[in-house]
Amino acid sequence: MARISIVSPCFNEEDNVEACHAAVAELFQPNGPLARYEHEHIFSDNASQDGTVEILRRLAATDANVKVILNSRNFGPFRSNFNALRYATGDAILVFLPVDLQDPPEMIPEMVRHWESGIEVIAGERANRQETWALRTCRGIFYRVVNTLSEFDIPENVGEFQLIDRKVWEVVVSHDDQYPYIRGIIASAGFRRLILPYTWRARERGISKNNALRLIDQAMNGIFSFTNAPMRFSSFLGFGIALLSVVYAIVTVLLGLIIPGVAPRGTLTIIVALFFFSGVQLLFIGLLGEYITAIHAQVRRGPMVVERERINIDTAQRPSSGSSPGS
Image (cartoon, rainbow, N blue to C red; front, side, top):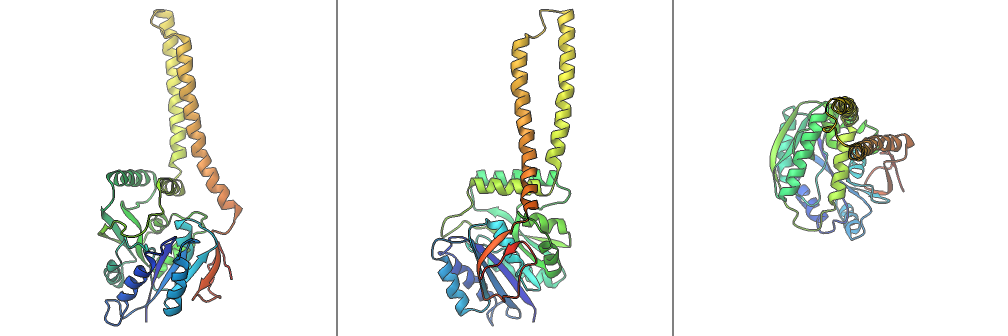
C-alpha cells in the first residue's frame, strides 16, 4: 500500500497541534477520501516552551502514524522543516502543512489525485490571502525580485505547501545547505508541476511566530541562495558610477575653462560626492557580507539541527547529513 508523508513544524502551538492532527487523520479514516493510503504525520518541534511537547507525546502514544522530532532549541522554521523532511518515508510527501491550518488540509486529496495522474510537483498557490495590504504588497515585491534575478521560476504566492513525488524528494533532501530555502530548491529541481490556487486563511488560534525581521531574513535568504545577481548588479552599478564621475569631471573642467561662473563650487561637490560614494560602498560591502556569511555558515559544517529526542521514529532511520540526532 502506498504511503503519504505529511510534515508539520511547530513552535509554541499548543492551541493548534491537536486540531492539525485530527484534520489529517480524518482524511485517512476508512470512510475518508484517502483511506486507500497509509500515512505518517511528522511533527518537528522547535523547543516549544508551552504545552506543545506534552500534547505531541500524547498524540504519538495513541497514534503510531504520528512521528515527533524534538529539537534542542529553536533552529528556525526552514531548518526544522527540512530536517523533518529527511525522515519522510512516503511515496508522496507533503512538504509543509502548518499546524495553524492556514494552508487547508482539505486540498491534500486533490493534490494526491493529480500526483496519481503523474504530476511530480503539486504546489498550492495562495491566490487569496486573508492578511493586510502591506504584507501582500511586500510579498509581491519579493517574488518579482527573486524571479527577475534567478535563473528559474519560483511561482508567485507559492510556499512550501507542496506535494512532491518520491523522486523529487530525493533531489530536495540531497541538498546539503545550512539554511535551505525549500521552495527554491523544489523549483530548481524541475519536474512536471501543477499549481492549485486556494485561499490562505487567517490564523484562528495562537500568535504567528513570523515577525517582520524573520520575514526579511527569509526573503534575503531566498535572494542570496539562488542568484549572484546582487553582486553582478553591484559591479555594473560601480562601473556606471565611475563612468559618470569621469564624465562629470570632464564637464566641470570644461565649464571652468569656458564659463568660470557656471562651474559648481568645489566644497559642496566634494561633500555630496563623499556621502554618495560612501553610501554606495556600504551597500556593496553589505551585499558582499551576505554572501560571505552564507559561505561561512556552509564551510563550518555544523549540524543544521540538533535533535533532543525522536518519538515513533526508528533509531536506525537517520538523515543522510545535516543534523545531530539526540537520544
